Length: 173
Image (cartoon, rainbow, N blue to C red; front, side):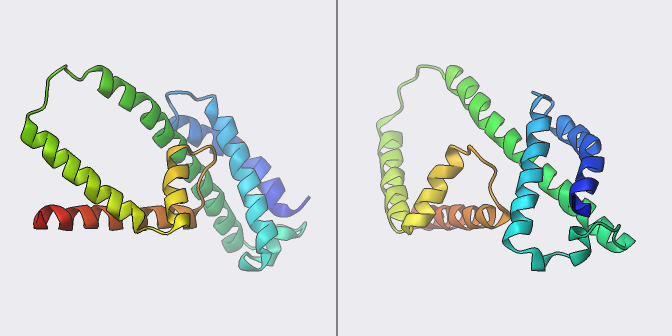
């Protein structure tokens, strides 16, 4: 067993505790988050081991600085996955509560027209995205797995472009 796997096993209780704090709504998810983080790290190491210190893959304990780097990476992956779970939970529950609390009020015609115009502008902006960008937007909504840092950054940039397109459109129209 490589050092990183043994070290992750040692860190597991602390990582699980951190995840449970973030996931107060369902602490039983903490074990899934930590297991997923372990799998993600293994996959990352398998894809590009050269990007990480070689001492992590041996049986000897690495120097302190490299050990600290691994602990930070493991903590970061667990934190990111915990926040992904928290966001997914919020999407599932907050929207249901919000819709249930809406009053049955008819919107004035000018607001309906403005909403339709905004939807047309949004549709044009989405049509301008590439197919992989649209797929990332769709997959983010049904997040059945945690996103990688790269995917998260791409998603941020896509959302930003859409917001800017809508902001410009609203200023012009």
